[in-house]
Image (cartoon, rainbow, N blue to C red; front, top):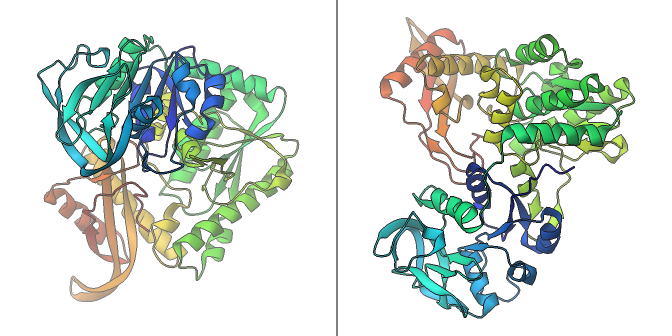
Length: 519
């Protein structure tokens, strides 16, 4: 059984770093969608039987030899198609128009003039109006295919939006999926609702019911083990699977000693006490910290933690015995990022650390009930399943835990110092009513010591760094603008209450696409 409803949108990915945002906007409009690499486009058409298609942007140039193209079946399908940026350009190149490199490139904020009405703009933009959009292109469309008309222009793009109303084919040179195009989400909703006629009735309650049936069909009477990390993803996956198959599920929580304050106890209490789910709690702090002794390279730390987690998990799985399935909290961004636009899925295990491979010797089939969902959708599902808000709304925490928030060597003393500082920081954020307004906040123990004066004595202790960011999807992040009085209060508490720290700094750096951790 597929969880995909009848009304599905296929998004062909040509390699844009913001393709995920297209999917998010479509789902926000209540319509289910999936992203498929352009190279698997025909297979995606057959598998999903979509009602509409969106072509993403790309870092490639249509003018280059062997640049990505949409399968001809897309344009022969009779389905509504929307090409975004590169998607518009390849649509033009494939259907009889022309695209060339331009001396007048457009990157960043731009304004388009609406020159003709079309269904894509219906109820949103009208001829004679000017609207802000976000451009990111070096090529430009020089001529459009037969049957198309120009519906919007910009200073650098005379074909900023084009339409073939009869065939329901549309192209826009700007990125409607990013927040920098203020009406972009509404435009994408227009495409799926007004142009394609899709209902917008996809819901998390429907996903839950369909996924439970799918898990039961996949697992049958088999047994499943699930690696709990203490984070939201694996917890929601475990509760969903337990709802489907009950005590056929056993969870394994590998406690590596790198968790935030009190989180290991919360995990054990939630799963054993509240949900009564069979849980194996493995105390492995000494093993992990012993192996991290003397290791300073961040990637080496990640790989050690990943390998050791797998080794411990595999040993526990053997003790349990008889399990045919391994459950993990893989999310849709993990699926997308593990597949290049030329094909090739990754074989990395996501359940705890996203580092290393699943050993073939384990000979287990994967159960990944969240692989169609984004992070915010997982939180919605968690609420649907009855998980406590304090758990569902918890800020993201990396698999390697405190190890990547302690640059340099990781020791028990450093972990204890950082846990206390982090606890104070989060307590103050919650007290100020800011926790839910921040996507992620955490403390870092910097590999720097400074001389300070506390009372009548001198100290030589660590510097603590604080970070807080806002984000929609975790791909990009902006620094949270705390008031100076708040930061001063937090710093005072940390210095007064946490032995080993005598100075606190705040990171005011915003992050481009990529990690927002401090490593």
